[in-house]
Image 1 (cartoon, protein in one colour):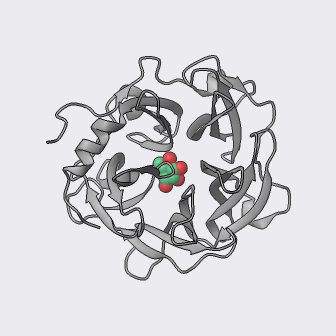
Image 2 (cartoon, helix red, strand yellow):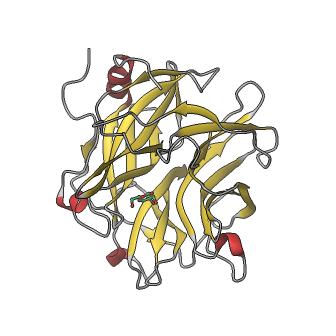
Length: 316
Ligand code: BMA
């Protein structure tokens, strides 16, 4: 049985954060990581300055919807003279890693060789420890699993190469030290032809562990004559061997519909980077960037999401 209604419901307060909420003049705020820290919701937002270059700044709220307190300084901003980060940091994901007692942040560092995967750690989102670029360009959309699988850390990411095609897909690499990563193994590819996810796909938020598998919320891109459309789909990966795609929804579960998703710097883009699961209520909060312009929230029930994805066929 699939759930025959919208799995994710947009919050009536959307967009919950825009450039107008920022203490300084910025172009746009979007694509935030989301975690809970000391009972508060912490977003690590991509802030694009009026230079075109992005940095990552923290916004905290007691309820994850409003009363946001924006950090006075960026948590992660490019350092002068560092080639690999000259054009900024983009699209963070953050995950609490119990074994290490720290949050691990992964984001895109944008430098002269292209976008690369950058890794940093933080306990409180007040300061960060930079590990640095851990996967070479061109690569982005990275997140760590919160625990080791088969004794190794697992990093999901999206390498792009001119080899097979530019239709890039989701891969994973394994590591013992979070610094040195194995060659990418394919997890999931774009579909072909007219499919909604036929151009490129990438992970959304860090994957969520469930009894049925790792829940993957991903973005898929379709190229059209009017430009790309970014939508959101679901998959479930094997807990012990996460390259195995147990289920993948044929259709998208969230696509641009509201005016704030249809209009902006990059129209028709929904780009989720944060997912918070409240285990007491079973509710999911999905934080996403809308049209590369604002930050939005949609909520859903984990049980409904699982029912839908479990009814979907397998497929990479
Ligand atoms: C992707 C990323 C995202 C962005 C999206 C739509 O390639 O760069 O940061 O939101 O494109 O422009």
